[in-house]
Image (cartoon, rainbow, N blue to C red; front, side, top):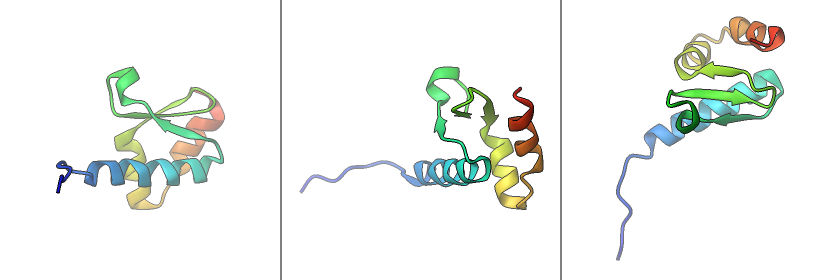
Length: 74
């Protein structure tokens, strides 16, 4: 029987971060590290959010800086 090898833990982390970010912003999110060659999320409004910043917000439960960034349209 063929078994796929690899660590899917990172995928689960990115998926969880993206779901929370999308929910908080009420805006579709995609993980586009390949496009920017950096670990970032991008919303439908073309605003990027570094993965580390989303991780900090998710851990702390404080999303105010992320929400502010989205509203201001950096």
